[in-house]
Image (cartoon, rainbow, N blue to C red; front, side, top):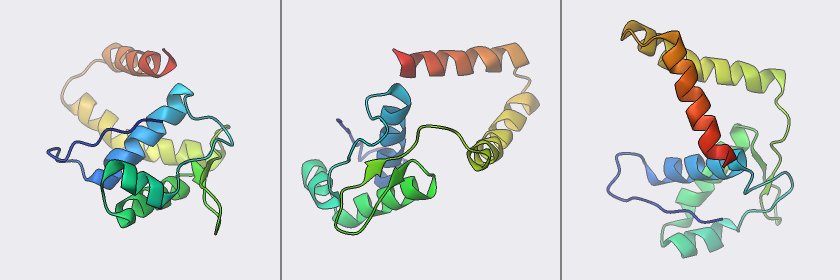
Length: 123
C-alpha cells in the first residue's frame, strides 16, 4: 500500500490518509483481513507525527472500515455494507447531491460521474 501526502493541499494530512486507505479498500488493493502498518511504522514511512496516523486510523475505525485492537496491527474489516453503512452513505451524499441539483447538474450527469469514479477504483 502506497500513500502519497501533499503537504501543500488544503486537505489535512490525516484526512488524506483516510481518503487514500479508503480508496485502496475500494479498489481491492486492500481486502478483508489485510493488516495495515503500525501507526508508528506508517508515520515513519511518511515522515509525519504518529498522532496524525492514529487520528486517521481512529476515523477509519469509526467508519467501520478497519478494526484496531490493543497490541495488534489494524486490519481491514469492510466487506459487506450494513444498514448503518447505507444510512451513513446516504447522509454523506445527500448534501453533495442537493448542491449538484441546485447548480443545475442533470441526474444523468451525476449518474455518469458516479459510474466513472467507480470504474477508476475497479481498474
